[in-house]
Length: 485
Image 1 (cartoon, rainbow, N blue to C red):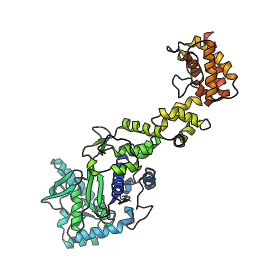
Image 2: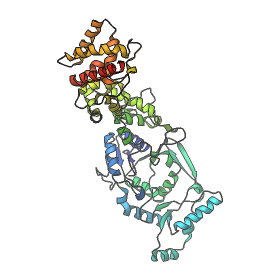
Image 3: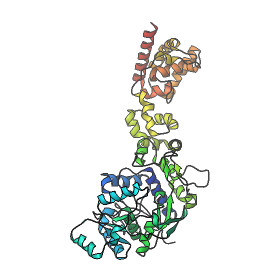
Image 4: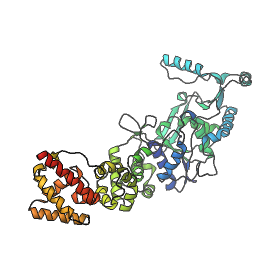
């Protein structure tokens, strides 16, 4: 096998969508598995849909995900330019060559004529295909129209009889009747190519050996192969990937606003977990292993593991996997990754080592941090019913004297550490001759306002500090006294 060269060719129409990222991942894995090269090409010929800044988003997303490309617009390479809008003259040259070889022709039909023909076909209950009327124009008529400055497109001239067959490494042999293939536009009136022309020319000139892309191109590939043959070029190896679905009826779609890589990162998913999960959307390692590093994915990846069946994007499974990754992070790494969320929660000045111990094992996503820690910066309002706890045997009436005792005990401490706070509370438990929960529960409620918190009253008080802890106890005691008359 010659050196493997794969590519990913996204359109700069927004953030990199999950399906596009999966295509990039598989192309990257295949290239790395075989010691080949991975190329980034930007297909920006759909000018109307281009989003400013989207190219840079694509570059940064691939780098952040660890999918470093060997050639591309911002890293260079011997087969550039790697942005299609900068290759306009190349496409024009080959479109004209296709006309000379009888594989394409100029079409002067107006939008109105085409719309009328389409409407007529639909009225007859037929699928519209172009009727090749401009193929029948004489050389003299074509020249007259060119001299008159009439706008035109260049269409592919596909045979109307016979079949075209090719082999895909996932879906096997694919045969399509030529009569089902439309004479699609190759070069638009503005001189920019359509995907039908550009992908063939670029893949050939950039030496792409394996074309890895979505299954939606499966039935169109025979059109591209007609172009390869017309130009006398070798046809690459095809690997079409199953569609990614949001559920059993609908597929994930950038146009329909489905989540992108960036969306998931902003929701608190780790990039490693997201890439790991995406790798399993349509591919199986053939083992029970589910957690993979990038190096492990390279080692395990094979085309035999690719499925023909659609893959459903299961957010719950992704979230489970994300939780595994969060919990496996070394504490220092966790704190670093979580710092933006600590800042959002207003707790970045607190003991982050303690916070990490309390919440890291309980998180599924990093964006859960601010709501879980909000009580540390703003005491939530709560009612006296929160003091009732059957297992601890406490309620609002019993809590009041306990809180007064606890307030006095905690006020005597010079240093607020988890150990010193626990020792003070445990001493109070022993003094009162009660269950631990009879003291711990009301103190937790009084200083947090919540039934469920990361950590118990000693950890909470340690994070709040002495002044804030005593202030909250004073407020809670005063409220209970007020309510109990």
